[in-house]
Length: 189
Image 1: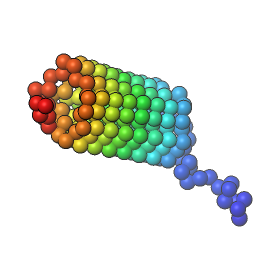
Image 2: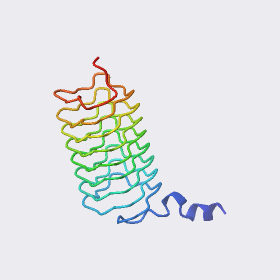
Image 3: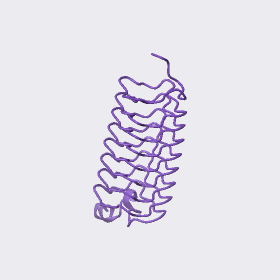
């Protein structure tokens, strides 16, 4: 009986086949793979371990990464519009040049992640940790940092038109030359 149980495939890895459009890699372990320039649109990566994986220039629009481990992964220039990163762990993950327009990054851990030149217009970044993250030249128009952490984050040259910082922790956030006149949730201090 023990031998039969050991030979049976694990339910968590049952659907962990090859990459492609609309795949379901929920709970899969796909670390440190080179998967750039792949069409993963409308795919599920919930609770998957994808740490260190390269998804550069891939199409991942409308995909879900809820509770996924994505630390040190690369989404450089990836298409991620309307994707779900809720409660994902993305420490030191690269999103430079990525399109995250209208995506959900709420309650995620994005410490030291980079978003240089990324488009996050209309994204939900509430209750997420962006401590020491880099947003140089990013489009953050209409995003919400409600109850989030942006301590020591760098916003040099970022578009913050309509960004909501209500009750966000902004300790030592670096905002050189940023126009905050149309942002909300901030006081003069």
